[in-house]
Amino acid sequence: MKLNNDNIYLIHFKYVLTKIHFINIELLLYLQQNRLKMKKTILLLSIIALIYSCEKQEPLAPNTYEITVTAKGVHNGMRAYIKLFNDNRKEVIIDTAIVMNEAFSFKGKVNNASMRVLTINSINGNVPFILEPGKINIEIYKDSIYNSKVKGSKNNDVFNLYKKEQRKQAISLNEIRQQINAARTSGDNDLYSELMAKNVEMNKESGFFVHQFIEEHPNSDFSLILLEKMINGRNQDIEKFTNSMVALANVINRNEANKTIGKKVEAFIYKLESQKNLEIGKIAPNFTSTTPNGEALSLNDIKGKVTIVEFWAAWCGPCRRENPNIVKVYNKYHEKGLEIIGVSLDGTGRQKDPKAIWLKAIEDDKLTWHQVSSLKYFNDPVAKLYNINSIPASFILDEDGKIVAKRLRGQALEDQIASMLD
Image (tube, rainbow, N blue to C red; front, side):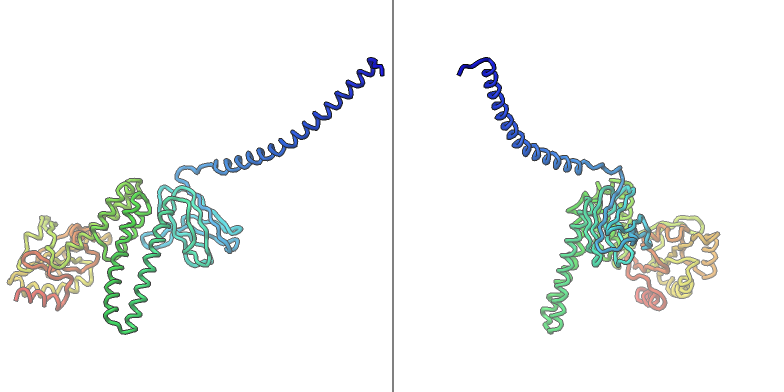
């Protein structure tokens, strides 16, 4: 066949169409393959963006707390509170919120870490936690609110560790008590004695556990809060308290609130030391105070073979009722070496002229022995030195100034003086 120009163009056009068709197919395949890749890439980028947006939350303003609480099973409209207990054990409300959809939140300002409790109307008990700047999450268990979970801040994390160790201690002590009861029931006296001795030792270790915990967490505000709570306990160890204070030196100096707690603990240590120095067998601390004539008088200046340090006040009914008995004892034994120094705690805000009232009581009750007072009520330095928190109170000293008896009244006082001077 003879090819003319039109035929050549037609063949060429078909060839081009064929090529375009194959190119389109290849392009479609390419786009289809890469569409999957693009979808994966877009999905990956979306996930990254989501994660990034979650992490990129706005930080809280300084000294701000934000508490998020979930409360499964708690009805809408219930009111929740953050509370503190003041020195008189009275509740003070710090913040409040309303339960909605089994959740609620608090937000506010706070300058330092402190122990607080969370309560909810209609639910018995409370959740103790550390209120401090930052974000805190609390999960409420309404049937066992004390076991609710608190997390999200460093001091609450330390508090959780403490509760965990405390539970271990409680379980161990409960087990030994059950064993003691079983031994008592079975009549096994040897085992009973052995277990009782073990129980005493475990209780002693339990008391020291707090100080050990503080030494292991010396940078936590919770440790200082814990030490402050220990002030209300009994049979405290001065050395342990002192060591804990040394360990927490940096925490105490962290802010003014912590410094206040530090001073409170220091005062308690001083009180413990005073109590130790006032035990029977110890030398009574010397002191100097002011006589009615305005002169300085020291305990060491007037010691006799027997000396009574008598804390009293004109306003104190029991003191005034006891004075005739002390007058009788003094008149009977003064010539044999009995000396008395009365320390008056007059100076209450209700006394318009405390000195005049003090002097009149001395005259009316015929108190002819030595008398001193700063007229500062219970803030009298001598009263503080002798750890006086109620009157009448007396300390009986031998000729060496050693404490041989305390707080004797009536016939018991006379019998004691008689045994020393007759």
